[in-house]
Image (tube, rainbow, N blue to C red):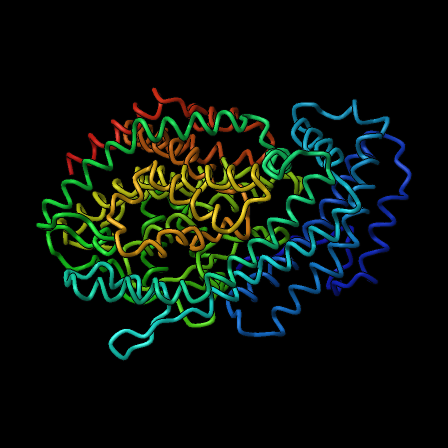
Length: 567
């Protein structure tokens, strides 16, 4: 069983309310610190308080997303956002000042605390008291996206489906059924397009105001600082987009042309993108959600006993909610429980192959949580997304060596699954480039109209192939396709990391294929660092480069394509 660490500073079983936690914050602000040893103890006490609050918030978020229709769960989440975080924010700023202004700061071990000090100084520079209520309002508003999309269901041939369940029909060899499913899904999404558009316009205005309050010209530049992107710039992102367009798009265009020919079509429509070109039925690597969990534990255990122990411990402690159902928020996530030292995995399994890759992806995040759980300070575990997604996307590829757990003796299905995964690895890159470039456009043109936003989306999506499909007669669905992407609404600018980490994951997998024992060892060592080193150093610890030049993209794409063609 997983147990929370014993508390030293925060009273055990403390009920989280402002009245109970305010004295703890006040004590930290007022405490006299007379030596470097006392400064380090102060950091540990502050870290413990942060972990307690983070885990309390985590469970409020988890329970709300597991059942978006429960008003009480929504209110519990909103209470924390409006009544706790709003009051904690200025006190956290005071604590940051106390830390940076400490006369003993220079006596701290620089190698150990360098990243923490850099991040704290950055937070101080960004903090504006007038942004506290705005950020709270943003956090509450953006949860409306989950309520809207979580309520979406469709009826096909008399049966009700969640959107994830209906999406499985897009893999059917029956083209008429695929078309019906796709049109029904699109029609349902379009019913809420105006409500989602209105919601996003509200979020856009609030985010722009936050950026201006903090002294930035636009929200894009603000977020690069807020996300701690010290290792690359917006200009680097544009260059990465260009590399993807130059190297990856032609590869995917060739694959789309081959698909069109194999299916015997003149052109691909949006409902032709997921079906097996040879007409084989959709892969079924597991039965129900419990079977998916059990097989994933076995897969991870076969790779490395420690990895299997991570997932089995989560199962024993009910830290999974994997099956799709009505009223459940869309998507999937791994949510670290800061005090417990373990995570919760949430996803919407509908019995598809994609659910397998989602599980091993989130399982990679889970392993990262366990590997970094023993780090001394809570801040040491707050990895940047470029590192967090390296953990998950690498696991998607490394785990392929043990996918026979899901397919048994069916070698044909196993090879097909690996083949599809390697296609998806490259297919991810243009979509990430589209979403990232779209957000650059949105926030550097903050006064645009909804119509201009739709036009920008179509233009950017087209530049990267528009999924290599013919959208004639479905222009409205095309224009509003961006509304499917949760990140645009809830975690703005958290997306280019997927492409950066995808390149890193290919490199990790390449190392693993060349030397499995050493490759896995370096992967685990890199994740064990948490955020005690900068991104480049963590990538180097994994035995890879932090590089997204055209040349590097080409090198790794060639490796993927050569391996895929052997399968």
